[in-house]
Amino acid sequence: MGVEKVTTKIDADARSRAEEIIAEAKRRSEEILTTAREEIQQIEAETERLSQAAEREESERLIALATLEGRKEVLTKKRSLIEQAFERALDHLASQQKDAYQKMIRNILLRAVETGEEEIVTSSDDRSRIDDAFIKDLNKRLARNGKKGKITLSSETLPIRGGFLLRSGRKEIDCSLDSLLETVREELEVDVSELLFGQGG
Image (cartoon, rainbow, N blue to C red; front, side, top):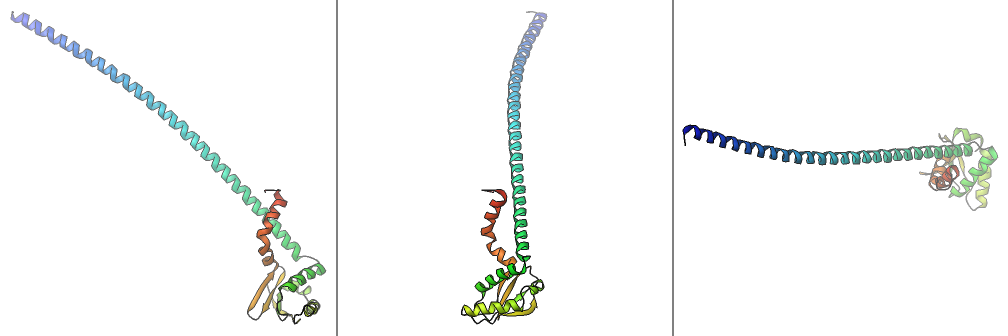
């Protein structure tokens, strides 16, 4: 075989081998591209699914948050209305006419007095209703109940909205209307709530 023929054959073999390599590379690259496209589609689908799930989760979270805030606002409003109802009740008790007010205070005193020698401290506003005549009548009633009937009215006054402080030595019983109303508030709140908002309010 001549040099030219050998050269021609080598050249032909090289071209054939190169064509085979190129064809294989093309085939391989197409496979890689196909796999990549499939993976991209899968990633896009998963991303969309996660995005939708996140949107639903955020939407549900916002709805739950709004519902919670709404309930808090309703509860705050209810508490405010209950507070107003107790304030009006306190105002009503403190501003009763003299006879009705004296009857209420007398009933409280008859239950609270232990010995009949205590001292009563009232507000300055109550001095016109809890007066000497009231104390005299109270002592008579206490004496009839077997107590000493020596209740006195203190010259001291307190900044309270009604009721009194019952004092015996160092012992004091707070019978101010604020304090008395507070002691029954917990059990009354359910009734007040039902009156304001209905059953289950």
